[in-house]
Amino acid sequence: MRVLQTSVFVVLTLLPADVAAGQGDERQLVIVVPEADDLRLVYTREAVAFWNQTLAALGLKVALRETSVVVGSRDARAIETFARFVSQRGGRIPKGTSGPQPPPELTELGGDVVLLLSRQPLLPFAWPLLGSPGYFVAIRAPQPRRPSDDRVLRNVIAHELGHTLGLTHNRGGASLMCGPCSSLAAQVTPGGWLPLTSRDRQRLQDLLAH
Image (cartoon, rainbow, N blue to C red; front, top):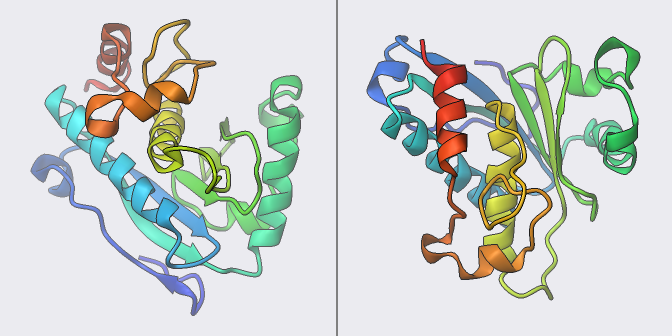
């Protein structure tokens, strides 16, 4: 386990026993956050737990594992700039080698997924990269005046992590992977999580079953 700088602390996420024993596929998650007390860090861990429980219930030996949290890094400025670029142009720029290349401050973090809890009111995304990390996820800044924004953000984070597992958008209806969908749906969902569709569950099994 790497220590990135003095402002990094490491928290491990509980995994299903077979994955923890090395019998499954761990997706390593690096979180970049402005402050250690950012509530979105709590929401991210709840979203990770949601996915690990969901994957285990589907009989899949795949889990997300939080490997490190980078707090208040000076390198975050370059990562934020790249996040703003992707967010503003994400639907109009190519992916892969022909697309915008991430800064070294991002690629040096490693892992399978780097998740930025941004200071900006950007449009959240999960952007595929080549190499390590395989995905760059950015989550918008909180909107304190927005009703039930905490519940909305939990679902936004879970939605973007769903993309890193291979899920795509659903058209219509109030589901976790809907796109676009109204934030009002997340405010009234029992238990706080928008549901997965049967198509989502089947796709996870098709993609992740070993």
